[in-house]
Length: 376
Image 1 (cartoon, one colour):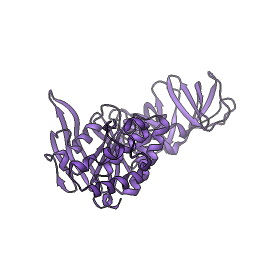
Image 2: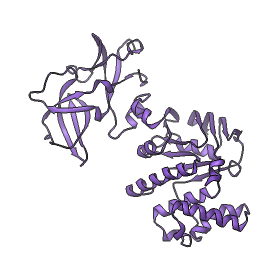
Image 3: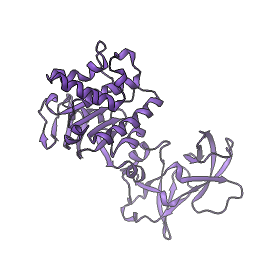
Image 4: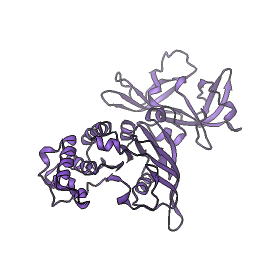
């Protein structure tokens, strides 16, 4: 649809804040700039403020303070119907007594668009979404995935400057979510439209977004490409939230040993994990309290007996081994410190046995223990 591409707009949030009666702050001064044609995903746990932020963009929530602009026009006080946006909700919100064609064209009929134009737009959107054979059916005759496509088609026919998606796939089963993720990615590429997408599912965020916005407790914790957020988390929340299994985070005391830094975990004083000196010593608090982070795929194991000396290795006890077909997850414990290791399928260690854990020092992260902020 070339019309949608032509009308793609920028979205600017400047210090956007939402406060409810009683002094409850849902969103603390969000700053975000979305380029025309960009797909940006707001991701975070329940209650983090992502849906409230999206609803303020849509005009469904009033903005307590800050400035919101769409396509260069300030829209703080502009009604939702005049913002040139279309929203797809978690619930399909289809009229049960209408056919697919009638549902998709309803907004255009309200705007009193010519019948020929409505038919053309609905047919074009239906062809894009593979709905041509379903146009005469009613919602009860459709599967969940088909209903969601109809809801998306209803938004497409309006040819808005911005699409807003509020957890549109959460009602679908795992297989359908995967299928719809691929369809949404293809749709964005085809339309070239500006899209803001809210989800709590990190897989959706990582696979769909040109950039992702990680939110927690009403604040933006990091904005960047999915790869960079995963590889360079800004703080311990982002590090622990993105990734399945999440990053291993170990609190300890930082020390210097020659040209290397060492972290000695509090719960296991005999375990020392070394990492290359990362030019962070001047940023470490006087107490030396830091959090060491390492993702499960950057650890590997070998039999504890006869393991070669390794300054980045230590012994651990196997608590659980999960064979997932394409990978093996080992849940370990080192004197009270839990660790998860991701590896290739192979010999499965027995529960209670000892293994030698080796750390890849080039993928070690260090965070300030007090603030949680990355020291890199």
